[in-house]
Amino acid sequence: MRTRVMKRTLVALMACTALSLSAQEQKQYPEQETMRPGMSEYWTPQPKIVTPGDPVTHSAPSDAIVLFDGKDLSAWQNTKGEAAGWDVHDGIMTVNKKAGDIMTKESFGSFQLHIEWCVPEMDAQFTSQSRGNSGVYLQNMYEIQILDNYNNETYVNGQAGSIYKQTPPLANAMRKPGEWNVYDIIYTAPVFKADGTYLYRPRVTVIQNGIVLQNNTEILGTTEYIGFPKVKVHGDGPILLQSHGDPSPGISFRNIWIRRM
Image 1 (spheres, helix red, strand yellow):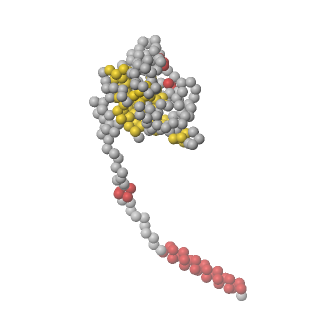
Image 2: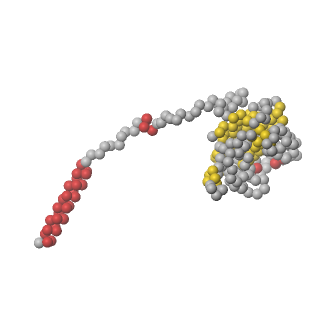
């Protein structure tokens, strides 16, 4: 008797389950709405309007800070905070080696930097690092090498466009001595942890004369002449131009501007 009851109960449960599944199968749910173009578009905030510079007149973009426009060195100082002692003539500035390095009065974090430079012609006896040597220091910490590498080989992580003593450039894009070279540098400043190590290392893209030399390259630390990169906690810093002790006459610069990012 008990067995018959259990069988009947099981059959009833199975029947209920079947009815329930059948009801679910028959229930209709809304279909996914058809996508329209506007569903993936947004209109705000609009990018700010920046008027590009004029390559003919060497004007800077409308939101740029002009660091040198060929007139004076009012945006610069020496490393002691005194007046920059480089020579200004004919719309360019030229390294005065007795005056030493110069750096911007303002400090910067992440930025886009445009700078044009020209190395002088030299006797063929001067080779490697002894020809047209200088550098652009980002935040006064990380050097992008300037050097005359036109038919002049050197250690590759010290070549023009290298992150000095760290990463060689992807190409040699040098123009002849006496001709102007252009660096466009896009730099992302580092972020530090509370313990003084990098959370995010600095990164840099360097374009010389329209040719990519560094492509969002990670900077390992300070660019040391002797030894390996060091990690030094810092905030915003100036752009420094190097007065190198090589025997070449002074390198010239013109049309320098920067955009904060």
